[in-house]
Image (cartoon, rainbow, N blue to C red; front, side, top):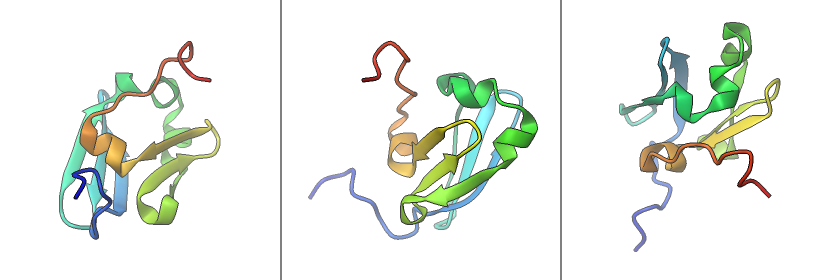
Length: 89
């Protein structure tokens, strides 16, 4: 069994921001907070753009269409920052 499997309850319930953090509440009651600097598109987005998120991937991801950003719950749980623009293919 792989430790990175998607588990029931890991769906996104809510997304919010502080000055320095992206905070994601999961349906199972856990809260994930990660440094906003890990995600430059979100860091440089307006508060209004950040608020315009929607669940994706069956609820196991977050999508911001205005800034073309997608994050997965698995990546957030692993503590995976965004790939730099120079490493994207």
